[in-house]
Image 1 (spheres, one colour):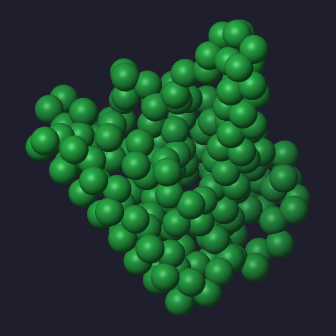
Image 2 (image 1 turned 30 degrees about the vertical axis):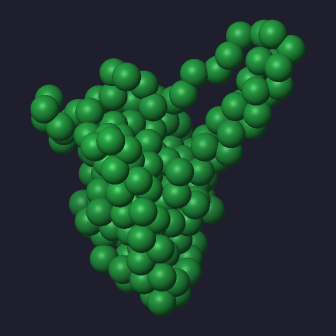
Length: 191
């Protein structure tokens, strides 16, 4: 089914249209979610939330971009929304720890699980994700879409609704920041 037929099916409430949307984009959405939330169960839960959001807002799709770009945009926005929620939760946990209540654990768990990572690389990948997590929001989004999803700069610009030069700049700064923080990490390990 092409994008226009799929869009028509979705907007008429076709169950087959929804199934086709999930079949077409589920893996891509899950991979983006894993880029933001490396614990597989968290990413899987967020993937479900993304599809619920897609189903609820399909009537808002104006067709200014491709259906795939819109799916990516909704996915990224949902991931960023979840990150902001977690940051608020961390702040609250910090205040709770000051008064002696339970401390909040980091959300990059020791049982890190991404399907594309082999066993011997899990520890290095966990460290990389911890450093990606520290990037500024827009740098992180551009990096995930480029390096983990393999989107072109034009596609990233459409998803993020920024100019092509902004994407280039964001990716350059993300790579520089990762090089700097990972170099510091590895230098510490050698001492």
